[in-house]
Amino acid sequence: MKQEAQNGAASMNLTIDFPDEQIPVLKAKAKAQGVSTEQDARQVLEHDLAPNWLRESWENAKETSVNQLSMDEIDAEIGAARKARRAARPQPGL
Image 1 (tube, rainbow, N blue to C red):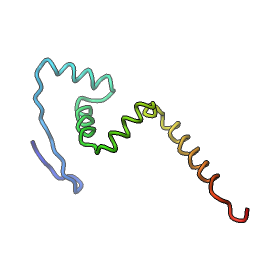
Image 2: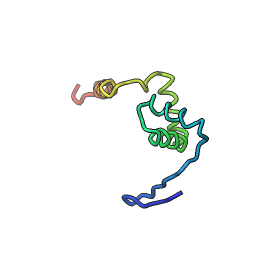
Image 3: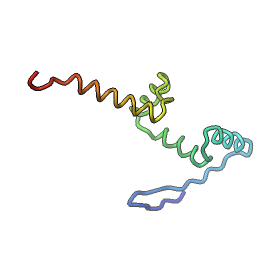
Image 4: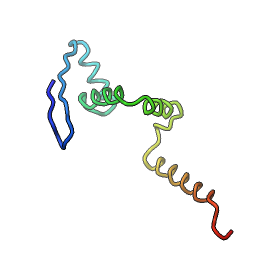
């Protein structure tokens, strides 16, 4: 394990030895997700280190299929919510 400082933040390089029979499985999983094996491992670790409230939010997003929205759909949802909030505010002088 090696730690280095980058941009004022500590970073760590890990070397993980997997049994030979697991390597093709890991590579296939990463390829299916469109990422490198390194990116897949990082995502797994980041997910595991995420706070409980964030993991619960991710799970809720999966259950309601919100995690399938495109950026355009997300932007549209945000715009609609902001418009509804503005419309619900009392208007001065009315």
